[in-house]
View (cartoon, rainbow, N blue to C red):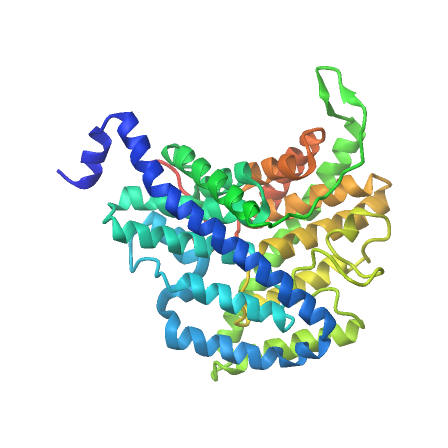
Amino acid sequence: MNKSNVFKQLPNSIRQFYWAILILPIAITTGLLVAFFLWLLDIVTIARWNDLWLVFLLPLAGIFIGWLYKQFGKNSAGGNTLIIDEIHQPGGGVPVRMAPLVLFTTVITHLFGGSAGREGTAVQMGGSIAALFARWFKIAHEQKSILLMCGISGGFAAVFGTPIAGTIFAIEVVALGRTKYDAALPCFIASIIAHFTCISCGITHTNYAISYTGKTFIFFPDFSFNWILLLKVAVAATLFGLASFLFITLSHFIKNKSTQYISIKWLIPVIGGILVISICYALGNFDYIGLGVTNPNANGVSIVSAFHASGATYFSWFWKLLLTAITLGMGFKGGEVTPLFFIGATLGNILATLSGTPIDLFAAVGFIAVFAGATNTPLACTVMGLELFGAENIIYYATACFIAYYCSGRSSIYKFNRTITNE
């Protein structure tokens, strides 16, 4: 009898206690690492804004990142895709070195002006920690896959402050069509613990206030609803889905073609860094590098500014999309999700301006809808909207996320995020 069958035959109370013992150190460690990571990001972001000459060192930073992964990375360069694939089919495992490597190289990317996010880094750290504990306790694959999902949910929840969305994201991103419901409770516990561990370290998350309050629906008096506005949201969601598709396609295209046509591998990040610098100077600003959550320039574009009138230009969303695709497709490290928030919020700002709809509502809708389309996680993104922006406009959030998901072509930023059907 294998370990998996023995585990299933244990009384439910013992199984839950067993999971609690395993999850507690994983979630606490993940929360602490994410807090440390976010603290470092704040420091390097301020340093870069104060000394913009650091951007000129981006090509050299890319060479250093490539050297680190060549010397020490092994299969950890697989990133989120490696973790998701390991959940489906055990292979070489998720190395513990993934956590310090991705943390350090993401910080380097942000310090020197790469356009990247933070979710991918947090998820990889959580997955790496979970894999380490699975090896220590010699966990069978079926339980190991759940632990890896706990690492994903804990990292996601800690970095964004959304524990419920983190739980659903970990389940939804792994595979659509075969939901691992047995992972729901462990992932929820991991999300809650990692989230509160992170904020107990003094980390605060950005507050996105939505002032729009529309007429309520007669059958659901707590929720805002308007048929015309819902139609406009649906049309906008189609464009959000197409933006997701463009980001996915361009990111994969740049990565594949640069690997195919540039034989000297260290030249890939050099060219990528030069392209990022050149585009910034052609635009005359540095609004589209780094995280983009806030901007020290009062007239600059950021996620926060996108929630206000004149908070974005017509092509802000495209420039962030392009610079992020170049950064991540040409050897630099970081997540995709915060740039997706930027793309969605700024595109939502412009669509609201053109259609005469509430800007803060459309920025919020774009914020989560582009993310939903790019990751195939419409339910998690709907819940994220609820956690970040409140429940009053949940009908618009859900409509946008699911339409964007369908319009993105079911493609994904994660190569192994795929639809699986029961046979």
